[in-house]
Length: 90
Image 1 (cartoon, rainbow, N blue to C red):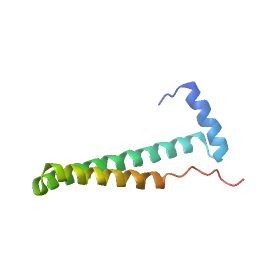
Image 2 (cartoon, helix red, strand yellow):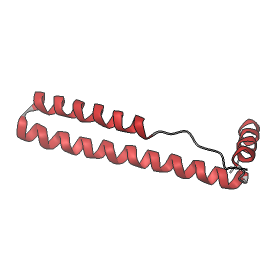
Image 3 (cartoon, rainbow, N blue to C red):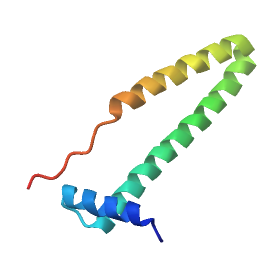
């Protein structure tokens, strides 16, 4: 995989900061990003299914209101779980 020079320079700088190889840090970034995207995809699919069921059982207006409430709650929870990375003790 080819990366822009600026990206590889930044990756090398951050790898030194975290006391990791550039390759290990890149794997970490890909893994974290992939898990975040998968979680977002799953949440969107679950909300879509929930909205379909609610709409069928409770009607359009109430279903839309409940889904907005659930989305807001999920957003709050996602924001509280975001923590900055901590470099290794050296």
